[in-house]
Image 1: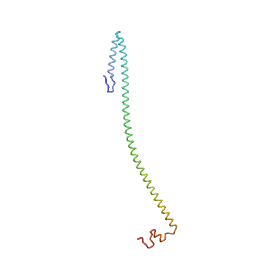
Image 2: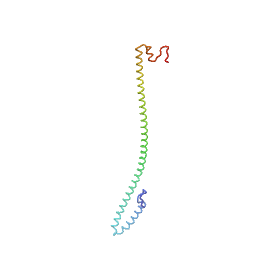
Image 3: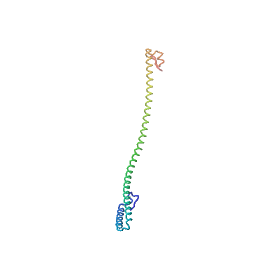
Image 4: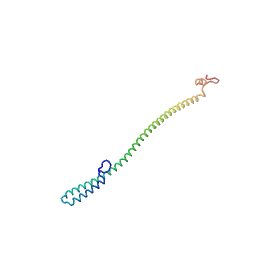
Amino acid sequence: FIQEKSGKPYLEESAFEALEKDFQEVINLLKGDKTLEKFRIEYEKLHAVMKKSHENEKRLMEKCRELNAELVVNSSKVAALTKLSKDDRGTISSMKTELEKAWKMVDTAYEKEQKAKETINSLQEEIARLMNLLEQGSGPSLGQEYKLGFPREGESLI
């Protein structure tokens, strides 16, 4: 009637009820004998301590069952949170990689934009220079045409 690892009380209820019955029988026998009065009193005290111990054991076992159930629930939650945390780390890592790619694309686009601006500025300067040349004269002289690589009338570049 004593079990330790099954999760049941150490003293089964049926065994406890049998002890109660035996106790009552012994008390009834002792009540009739005045010489055993001190023994009966001590026996009743021991019985009261055993009953209190049994009640405490039942309460503790119930608390253990509750705590065990709570432990199972919490371990499930921890496992789920661990998985979420792992998934989040993967998501964060992939987002960082995507962010790095995006910044590289931004840097490349910025460099291309700077080169395009330089080209535009250079071309605008060339246009301004050529416009200035046009304004200084009505057009290039025959020598200037030759220097610029323009053919004279009737000539070819070859």
